[in-house]
Image (cartoon, rainbow, N blue to C red; front, side):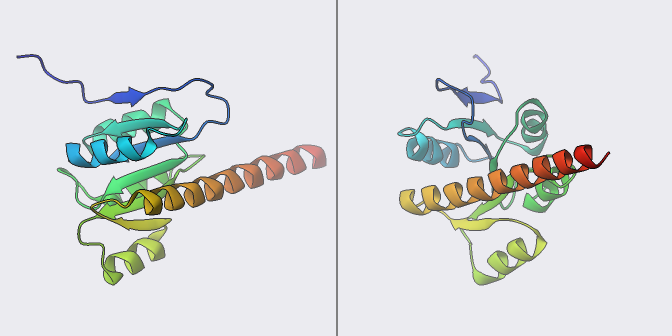
Amino acid sequence: MRKQPKIETQSAPSRSKQLRILSISPSDEDHLSLQAVFSHTKWLFFKARDLATGVELLQEHEIAVLLCERDLLVGTWTDVLEHIQTLQTAPSLIVTSRLADDRLWAEALNLGAWDVLAKPFDRLEVIRSVKSAWQRWQDSVHMRTGAVRTMDAAV
């Protein structure tokens, strides 16, 4: 019996300015649903079944948007949030859950997540949320780059 790799990617041509998305979820159904949503785009989609693999991918790739299941096999979305807050270019975090109620939504947004998506995924809602998360990520990268240029000019 052949063991499946933990890390899988779906590549597309032209990686410059290409949206890179990471899904961290123990559910194969989540990854398949998201892959179907993103299959009509040129977005680069990475998937991880656990926190450790997700952290590896975050270290290897500049991820703009991270979708994370509320409850992982080891840890939760808040553990992911703590990790990405240490990154120089933190991705926008979207929390996913079958139990996406007002309490989770309020908690996630108050702690720094970008959005919360209910499962099963609605294609249009996923695309809307990912696009707005990507825009927020791009804006933060441009602001940080502009601030560095301003400081360099002052020195």
